[in-house]
Structure formats: structure tokens, C-alpha cells
Image 1 (cartoon, helix red, strand yellow):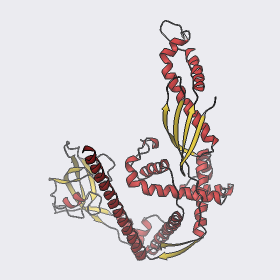
Image 2 (image 1 turned 120 degrees about the vertical axis):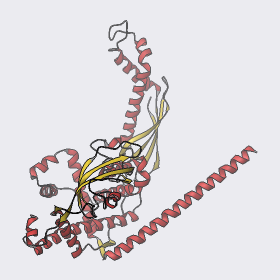
Image 3 (image 1 turned 45 degrees about the vertical axis):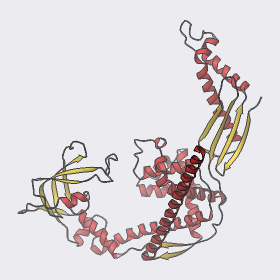
Image 4 (image 1 turned 30 degrees about the vertical axis):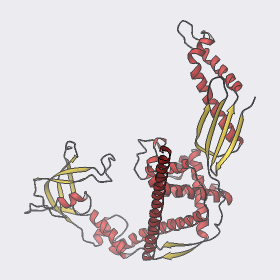
Amino acid sequence: MSIESSIEEVDEVTRKFTVTIPSKMVTAEFETALSSVAKTAKIKGFRPGKAPLAMVKKLHGSRIHMEVASRMISNTLGDLVKEHELSMIGSPEIDVANLKEGENISYSASVSLYPSPKIKNYEKFEIEVPKEEVSEDEIDQVVDRLRQSKATSKPVEGRELVGATDVIEGTLAIQLENEETAPAEPIIVALGEGQLPKELEEGIPGIKLGEEKEIAGSIPLDHPNAEVRGKPAVFKVIINSISEKVLPELDDEFAKSLGIEAETMPELRAKIRERLEQEAEKEQKAATQTAVLDQLLEKNDFLVPQVLVDEEIKHFLVRAGAVDSSKVKLEDIDPTPFRDQLGSISEKRVKATVMVDQIAKQESFEVSDADFDKYFGEFAEQSNVGVEEVKKFFQDKWRKRELEAEIKRSKVNELLVSRAKIKFLSKEEALAKKEKAEKAESEKSKKSKTKDSESKASDKKGSAKKAKKESS
């Protein structure tokens, strides 16, 4: 009396088990469970645990059988996964063929496996990446933003009509389509800076002070309430007062007022350049790593299970702010509606992570105490907290394990970039290359859609012919 099983390799990352559990084993488990339930069963007319076994079986037998069957399926599948040394991820897809009482339990289970491809051809690379350089115009833009942040305002006198660059103070009420107008809210905002929806930026100039104006438009797509984003609305505006913005002079006093250790304007511009160059260096490093991984993915094609892609889609939605993780658990997010839009990029991210992790294994990379200490020190400095506090945070074994994986990935990225021969492109060359790639991708997508449409039309035509033939 033993369990019968077979395993089928569906593809690189999927295995299918077909399992039969003998009825004798099921019956033995059922009788044990029935006896256990009978010891505490409360049945009218009997003291707790004193009802006849036959009566307990009659009342609770079906439920007990289902619980026993579920447990045996779970246990046998778990044992088979261990026996075959499989790295199962996600929940298995179980199809029960027979679950009748007194008979063998028969089921099949498809399990997804974590990919373990052999990564090849990562000895050298020739890549092209944009050269990130800081221009005087970029510094000017930062200076202007800082100047705007220090702006003051003074009341406008002798004018009743709102100008396109005025600082306005008033009220705004919003009426969604087929709904009552929401209570008016106070607003103080500078026009012409894109702080308001386009319709309001264009519709408010020319309003007379104290008069209400209704402006048709739609709720911005970045509105905090996802349910109203993009919906048609009427904005009811009353402007009570107007002021004009007064910008400070760009002199040494302005530089000192910012509190960033700059006593003069040249020092301020030097500080800004230094920060922008640091950011540019990070962006260029990230672009280099991306280019290397993209090339490596082209050289190494392998499958990843849908469950990993779906998990990445969920994380993407949380990172993008489309889902509030404080209100919705990750496991409760349904990725299905987003597969068409996010599936391709999510699959690419998953493959890149798998590929880097595999290289770490192939290179036998390890993480030393010195590696951890270096990370703790950098993290503490960036977060402005003590090193001991950081160490305490990473005492959790799951956090420590994830950190270990991240450090290994950093080592792999450093290895790959060190093997890359890099050609730096000007911004114009990079833009032209990007536009060319996007055009090629667009043409590829159009051809794919045309092919799908032709295939569907052919299938429809074939079905019509078949139906006509059968009817005649």
C-alpha cells in the first residue's frame, strides 16, 4: 500500500505531478480523524464525547473527509516536491480527479519553479550609454527654482481683473458630473506655474474680483483620490484678492539666505554643480548597468513563471503609488488587469534579477562581515541614524537575507560593468538612438497586431465554413 505518482516536465519552470493515494490510507486517516472529533463532539441527547461513532460520522463525516483529503493532498505534494528537490514558488494548481469517500484520491498538481538557468557570455560587453554632463542651463534652472521658493508677494492695487501670473487668494468648489457641488475650499496659488489643472490656469485670468466663474474641465490624473481621476467636472471659482510675486535679487545675500554653506553666488553655483554632477554620475552608472543587463538578456533567453511576473507587477503598482500598501495587502492585489500594460517590463525585471542571482552563484560570491559593515555605515550616513540602530534593524533574518542578496547583486553589477567597453553618446546621439528604437518597437507591435487580426479573421472564416458545411 503506497502512493503512486509520476512527474512530467511541462517546461523549464513547470512540473506536473499525477498522484493516487490508496483508499486504505485515506480510510485509515479518516477513521483517526473521526475518532478525534467524536471525543469532543456535542450532539443533542448525548454528553460531550459520548455520542455513537456512527452518529458522529453521519453528522460530520463529509466535512471530516474533505479535511482529511485536503491535508493528505497537501502533505503528499509537499513530500514529492522535497523528494525531487524542487524549488517551488507560489501556490500549486491542483486539479482533483476523484474525491469520493471510500475510493482512491486522485489528483494532479502543476507547480512553478524558481528559474535556475545557466548564464553564459558575460565575459565582455560593448555598450553605448548617454554621457551625463551638467550644463550651465541646468544650474540656472536650479537657481531659478530656489529663487522662486524665496519669492514674496505684495497686493495689487487699482486692478480688478486677474492676470496670468498673479498670486490669487479665493475659493474653489468642484462639482463632478451628476453629483452635488462639494463644499468650497480656500486656495492661495501662483498662476502660470502649472500648480492648477490646465483648464483653471487658462480660465482664471480675466476673472473679476468677487465674481464667481464656472470653468469646465476634468479632475487631474494625479489626484489623491483614484476614484475621481480624469472625471469631468465643473470648477466654481471666486477670487477675493490678487498679489504679484516679488523675486529676490540674485546676489550674495540671496546665496547666504539658502543655508547651504554658500556665501556668494559663485559658491552657490559651485555647490549646485557638485550636487548635479553627483546625481549625473549615479544616473550614468545606472544607465551603464541597464545597458549591460539588456545585452546579457539578449544573449541568455530563459523562461520565468507567471507567478514571479505577477509579484513584480504588484510591487510596481505599489512603487508607482497606484495601490496604497498601507490599506491593501500585497497578496490581495489582482495583477491580471495590468498584465497587458506591465507584463513585458515586469518580466524583463524578473529575468534581470534571476540572471544576476545566477551569476552570483556561478561566481561563488559570498558576503563577508566587512561587506555588511560597509553597507551599515553607508546606510547610517544616508539616513542620518546611528550604525548600531541600522544593525539592529537588520537583525531580522529575512531582512538580513534580502540584504545579503542585494550585496551579491551589487558585486555582480560591478563585475559586469568592469568587463564592459563603453562608448559614451552625446545627448543628441542618445535621443536619436532612443527614437529609432521606439520606432522599431512600434513597427514590431503593429506587425504583431496585424498578424493577430489576420489569424483571428482566418479562424473566424474557418469556423464559418465549418458551420456551413455541418448545417448542409
